[in-house]
Image (tube, rainbow, N blue to C red; front, side):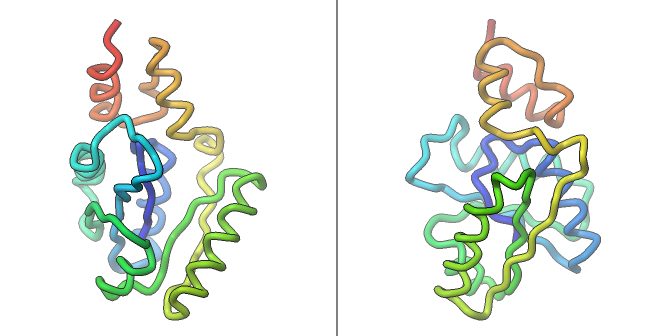
Length: 155
């Protein structure tokens, strides 16, 4: 499973999913409701956007969830969590997350993938900020996501 908030789903996320699909027979993109964050897009729309971006990938499934990631993994028979590392600064948090996940459910392993170099600097936070200030995000997200962002931040 590749879990995250995906608010919004970026080209970096897209890259990691497609690469994970070459490694694993089936990848579940699990979009978290995450009550600790206030997302720009509601869960249902984030799921819909990711499904539309990944519609051409036969071995991917996109679903929303709430609760602990490891509980979702266990309920769905998933034993690998894929996480992305853009920079060294991501490592400490991701390492803590992986260690806690293993402590909560020793049957689930975490695998780290690094994005293709052209996507290293892309984050959902930056995309939301650029879009909110009227900037062009089309080179960082799929056109369906760019259109959804434009509808949220019309000029």
